[in-house]
Amino acid sequence: MSDYKINTKCVQSGWQPKNGEPRVLPIYQSTTFKYESSEQMGRLFDLSEPGYFYTRLQNPTNDFVAAKIADLEGGVGAMLTSSGQAASFYSVFNICEAGSHVLSTSAIYGGTFNLFAVTMAKLGIEVTFISPEADEDEILANIRPNTRCIFGETLANPALIVLDIEKFARCAHTAGIPLIIDNTFPTPINCRPFEFGADIVIHSTTKYMDGHASGVGGVIVDSGNFDWMAHADKYPGLTTPDESYHGVTYAKDFGKLAYITKATAQLMRDLGSIQAPFNAFILNMGLETLALRVERHCRNAEKVSEYLSASDLITWVNYPNLKGSKYYDLAVKYLPNGSSGVISFGVKGGREAATRFMDSLKLAAVVTHVADTRTCVLHPASTTHRQLTDEQLTAGGIGADLIRLSVGIEDVDDIIADVDNALKKSQI
Ligand SMILES: *Cc1c(COP(=O)(O)O)cnc(C)c1O
Image (cartoon, rainbow, N blue to C red; front, side, top):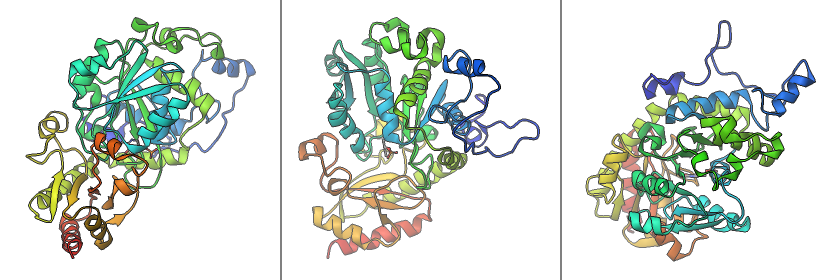
């Protein structure tokens, strides 16, 4: 499918039915797969022959959807996970072990921050955080001999800071380590991080990819570009034999597919966070309309952000594609067609006015979600990010007054009318 444009890939990539097969991707609702001989089954267990044997590792429905996402991102392979959190964890843990260090930007999703700062520390993996605005000298100075990857978000949730992916990719490659990018908010419609040097991309498919707030899920996509063998001492898990697979050496036996094969064959086998095939089916339906929806989300968000920036009832507004935004230049480079449907702003009057604003909305719902068809709103400091200290909030670009508005695909006039009414009520 790689010759087609991205709008076509959304609809057509992945499942390619042969003569007489179902037009629509079937749900392979089966834990197991049948074989004629135990010898053949044995070859599957040795990874010497491809094939399905147990859905905890791989399932055809999932694989067709993963193939579509790999095609959208321009990668060589992908693996679906049960959630975005699982994707973040596996993407890093696939190349780290106790004693490893990870350098992450501080402008990341709150759940990822907890995973990195608290849970991974318990596993003996130390993660340190650096400003996304750090210059190259500062980034390089923070890379240690045991650093195994750099992690960042294309468009930080909820701070909406645009990452200079090329800068971080250059530093990672100077140090001989890969750059992992969480591309959840822009989706491959608006940005394809591999084109700017990222090596691995992950998504919470729960957001725009599913797009209807119907199924939690995640995906890891491998560009196939990182040369693990050239840095073999750093990545023994990929470059030395895996005894749990009869001595397979992923980087030798699977070439460009080494990383994603190890993630599937080893991490999924041992940790088991597979996406249910039914959820993968729903995800695929979301992907079919992804390009249409993302475009509408962006056009609506642009209009709402223009409305907000002209209002004197707000103190600031951040939408990267809005002229005057601090991240405008980066948005022009990385997100020329729009960033996402998400806008952040501060209501005049601080925390109390922000609460009154949220309680006065009628169309926009107060939910712990973003990036689906329905307009919704959240106050991170009192909900998703409440476990963070004020310093951590500031480092992540999230003030106590920040409101995150996820603009849906309804008629933009109705969305603006709702926001306008609630802003007026917030000041009473
Ligand atoms: C939601 C989100 C995650 C976590 O994904 P889940 O599917 O909720 O586990 C990770 N990264 C970003 C940017 C997110 O928005």
